[in-house]
Amino acid sequence: MSKLWGGRFTKKTDQLVEEYTASITFDKELAEEDIQGSLAHVTMLGKQGILPAADVETIKDGLHRVLQRIKRNDLEFAIADEDIHMNIEKTLIDDVGPVGGKLHTGRSRNDQVATDMHLYLRKRVVEFVDMLHKLQEALVTQAKANIDTILPGYTHLQRAQPILFAHHMMAYVSMFGRDIERLQDSYKRVNMLPLGAGALAGTTFPIDRHFVASQLKFDRVYENSLDAVSDRDFILEFLSHASIIMMHLSRLSEELILWSSTEFHFVELDDAFCTGSSIMPQKKNPDVPELVRGKTGRVYGNLVGLLTVLKSLPLAYNKDMQEDKEGMFDTVRTLQGALQLFAPMIATMKVNKDRMRQAVNQDFSNATDIADFLVGKGLPFRQAHEVIGKTVLYCIQQGKYLLDLTLDEFKQFSSLFDERIYAVLQPENVVNARNVFGGTATKQVGEAIVRAENELAGT
Ligand code: ARG
Image 1: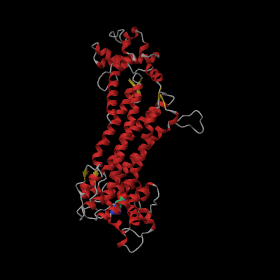
Image 2: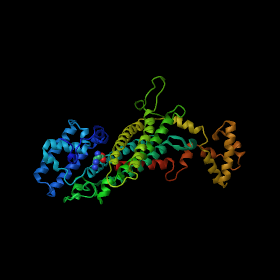
Image 3: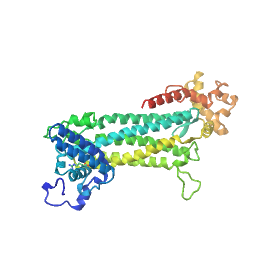
């Protein structure tokens, strides 16, 4: 059979043009969604009396057979049939005969492809929310196991103030929590039906778009036919949210890579998540976080790519829009790959509590606290800051830490010091002194863990 749109043409399509314009090599991923959409459409055509019931049944049976063949991998798609929509329609017509040609009544590929994309992304959004919950669970489990593990917290990658490792894990739980919220919010705009918009202007047939929407479990119907076929915002939103998720994963990756180094040695990733070197026998490389960090680039690229495709594009459908797919599929695969590995990698990670503790004992991350101590004695904070700055400088010159100084040494810097500072300087006390909502005190972090657990239990 020749092209489904061949009537107006007198010449065959150039072979190279056929290959250049075809999307079947990648949009075959939408096969199931395409059939799902067609089943709803043809059911509606029957209900509205646009097609006789017998034709509707024939077409539905045919579509089910095509679906079975696709699932069995027993259908060869043809470049000559351009895309998934026409490959399926042609296969249907081969199967049921010319009556199959009635399926496309009152429909265009423009509203059809948009519908397929909505159906596809709707599923992915739900899956990604679920994967993010699993990652949060792994992080919460590590937080619980490390509610008493203290490590230096950093700013500028310089030791700043001691914090609980649990607090650090819970920071990521919050970040991924926002990612979940964003995805859930975008669901409203993914869960909309474009079908019925026709090519751009609607259709002359008395269709029932709301019936199709309810069949496909869409909450809403696009209100404007031009908008329905031109809109790719929902894909851009997904690509943006995916970019932010990857950005979060890449920050965690960077920390895991640093922490796995001999210099830090704060954590050890499980052997199952690392690889060796072909030349250096001692190596154990954190390839997974490195690749997640690296693959963040292509996810950003896919977002910028589609933004650029859509920029200045006139309404309504333009072939440019076929370029919305490969980047989206690539982002879906990249994000699936990363999230799938991250949860078990976090869950199996060994946390080197002793090494973290040793680091805290050998730094000045408790300096803010004796400044606060002097403030408690009535010294203005600026002066206290100056006094402690001098004290720290003295320590550095003497090769000591604050806890190594005698009270006499302290008193050289301020007569306000007394023996209570030794307790103030203990890392546990430094941590627990930050007992404000959202702070690193054990009590606050413990409560944050309970809140997160309750939320996860409700999902
Ligand atoms: N393969 C096309 C795409 O992905 C389907 C829509 C084609 N519509 C058209 N008028 N050529 O965008």
